[in-house]
Image (cartoon, rainbow, N blue to C red; front, side, top):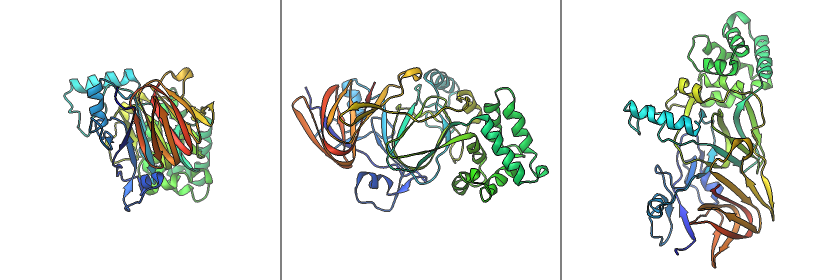
Length: 383
């Protein structure tokens, strides 16, 4: 039997919304003054993690091919200095149908306008690494949105904003949340004056200040108005969000550990120069109002917590453990451990490996793992 523990690494992704030296700060390593948005830890074919040292495989996608196994997750360090795109992800059934449909149309898999690059769902959860992680996540209650529209009307001459009444009528009509949200992203001539008025209102009413950093990063984008329909959530360190299929969201600011299905299926509605398809977004959108998007972890003892939605959400195919000290973690299949503070030792099957801050380790199969140390360790595995 091959070794259980293997060190892995990857190169940070330099997306425009990333923090300067963001990943380096999380890992406690020297920075180079570059934008670092994400570090991918997994077998995703776009950027598989590479093995460090004398592994028989160069990268995790090669391990998948050689072993016949599959990592049902992608673990990321995410560091946002600016808002990400407004987006949602399909369910498995929606992804399968959309993938087949675009294949039949002959759209190349690498085409910029392709929506479905694989037939898989992409549920996500994210755990904040520091206090103040901000996100838009899920729709607000209709009554709360209407209250904001009343406030906006009071700050602006009503005859200058005919779009306000359109917005109100759509919001209170049949399937109002979906129809109103998609109208805001539609490019209607009534929308630009609304965007300007809502952004300006931030100087007079605190309820509109959330729009200021979004408008700074994406001036004039209709997605700015979409933000007024979404819940603005601020997390403390260790708190988490759960983003199932259809959930509309956008991370605004902060660093976190993100765990998701290994899929590229993203339906975008705004706040991005990338491909936007509001019609397809509308098909997958979960347009229900309210509900707390926070994911409360299960306390497993010895300081080990398990992040897993369960319940009515079903099995997303993965789970995330977090530990600040010594304890036991049993995993049902391959996993990846990452240390963001302190130092730990992992032990199982007579093997052990030292994992200082910033290092990541691939665990090749199911195992009962003894975790020794102090700091902050995350361990992702299938479920």
